[in-house]
Image (cartoon, rainbow over all chains, first blue to last red):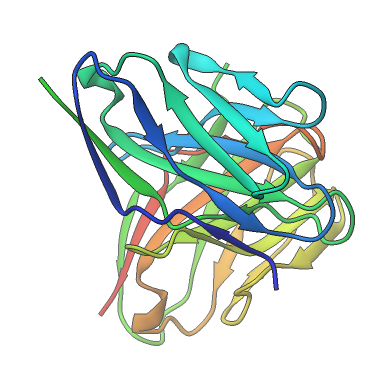
Length: 114
Length: 112
């Protein structure tokens, strides 16, 4: 079965410190990988994606993510957290073949402490 | 550019009532989706469409129906509302299989 795991419901980090939000997946083949962010009472917003090529992907607002094929992981990172980064983050994967679906993780709430 | 527009934003239904959630996009996207978001559960796909006249079931289609008569519109119909359908519903659209999705602001539905 296809699945996406975000092992941490909550991540707290001090402002200015680096942050990591973890994501692992179990999807056949080499899926497309995405990160989305959701602010309160809003829809999800796209941050970045991995399709092919360099394992380190850079996205919006200074975020980046590292694809690790052997560990089937796609962790979201930022070198220096801002209070405004506090939000709910979702990892998502789409199989390259088969059903046209985007499978989402359960989300990780990031709180950046001033 | 309005992007993806959902209406209504909030609705309370009684058990057994029916309603339609509207979704419209102005980006000429072929792909459109309906998700529901429940606390701690992430997003679950209800239905999707890859173009006008084409729809398909997602992970949790029971109790819902969709249609896609135009590229712009993708309404979600709830028949015989049940408390289990209390959720936040998101419509999304995308231009390709590898591209990002654009989400609406959501519709919060409560069934009492």
